[in-house]
Amino acid sequence: MKLVKNENNKPLKETISDKEAEEAFIKILKWIGEDPGREGLIETPKRVTKAFKEYFKGYKEDPISILSKTFGDVNGYDDMVIQKNISVQSHCEHHMAPIIGVAHVAYIPNERVVGLSKLARVVEVYSKRLQTQERLTMQIGNSLMEALKPKGVAVSIDSTHQCMTMRGIKKEQATTVTNYYLGQFKEDLSYQNRYLRFISK
Ligand SMILES: [Zn+2]
Image (cartoon, rainbow, N blue to C red; front, side, top):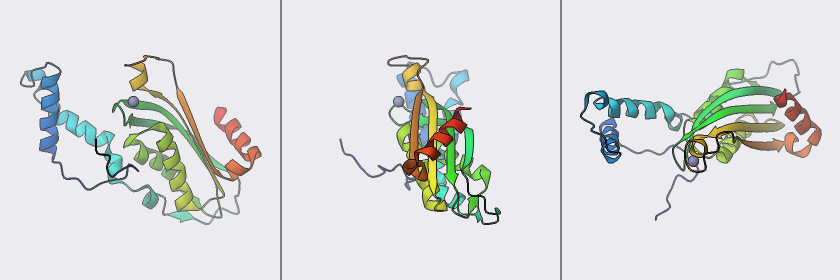
């Protein structure tokens, strides 16, 4: 096995056409024992290709540029900004099975703030790639740190992995929680505790 490039799960320039992707899905249909030529399936490879484009559209977007527009006019607001319950719909990189849950994102502004919708957008972009929950959590935090240079960042994700609920060990109720703290959230436990209190409400 050759372990190559893209360990950071960043966009790569590969040129696989939609047609080639559709052909691959036709092959998979045959492999599971289906007839790709029957009426109900004839358009399926096309539809699945389209759906995959949506599931994985995050490779085409750059979170840092999404966060590049900041605002300085916040009248000295200097406490944490928390966005809770941002829905997460991602896919695990080990089984390509859905990861469904929520993310909570917080930062302590360093004079500049970012539009609130942009926090959810960053979660969205990284979610729409093949992921591990641990990496997803850290990528969101690191991009906020890099783009906003805030005094601190906290990111939590609470999700269900369908590779665990639908197959394998089949633990339907199991959820996975990951946390990532930077700056003041890491150094000052009182900040971390306040953040945790807010997100658990
Ligand atoms: Zn998995």
